[in-house]
Length: 432
Image (cartoon, rainbow, N blue to C red; front, side, top):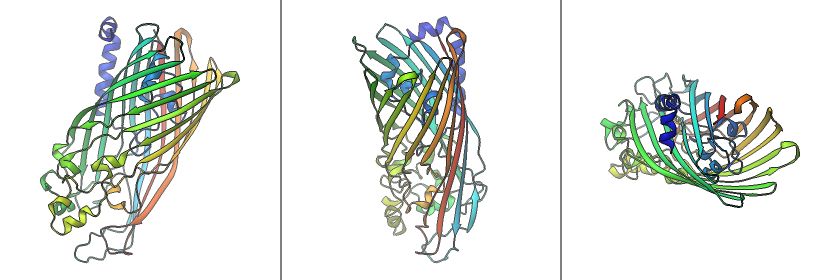
């Protein structure tokens, strides 16, 4: 059905193909760890809340059950995402044997502006069943420090991007109160790291530790969803499985599991209350299981301590080798929407404990995913012919954490990570 529809609309098919190629090469955004705060322009204006309140053809990125309720439509958006990242080292290195001190000072990441597109389509194949297709990105463990941070070559940094292509199927119950959906996730990710040659002595495969260009991997997973509606109240629940990805072969000496970098499972549960005058209040809770991905969740020590002692099992790239030490992350998202056609207005706020412990400062210089609060707003302006334009603004105020250099003598050095972000997304939708 989808292929026949695209065949009858060659311009749509060409546009989708071009978007896929653009997104495969585009950097991704990261706001909750390295997951996005929302998927789709309307959801982003509500701080990502909406598991119980689908509004567009990208709703399946949060809850595939919602695709049964949004009708026949296309949605496309592009965001200008701007993160600001820096680290500060205080205190001089001891220069003692078996230590790894850093050069004191503040270094700021150069790259600060990225364009990130997304696309969604939904076909109502029967009055109760819908087929959809979503294309969107996440990732954003992206840094580009001009200094040789770890005494390697300049620049030092990482670039991680993840692209998701998600066909969805959703069905609504005959009474209109319940809907169920599934999305089959095809994931494609790229990764590159530069400037960490100094860790070669702690790597199980130093030749595949750093400066090997961009490597790619693919994998598959699923997202399941339920949506129930009772008068003014809606309830939504969605679960995304862990996505098992191919190893990054060119970085088998860096990531635990010989280059493994799977995508974590997560779930979202939430409610929507409808009030008079078109007002809706949304409240979502999300949990992301970063700690279950070895290359992300494994702490730096004690594994690296074993490597200092000559144990190959504690080296970078080993099956139980060091990672970034991330904890699971819990996020609360709240949003309010009000107004009626042609103008609908939105505000949102989300908060969560960032996933990096104070004991894990060293490696997280490369990946400072420390944002905790997001303030959002936006609107939709309905146009003629079933078309609409939407805008979403996100501002994440500066967040910082600090802790000791775990590879230096106690009390000698402190590392502080600091990050802030903003994003402006423009979306366009039309029915068919």
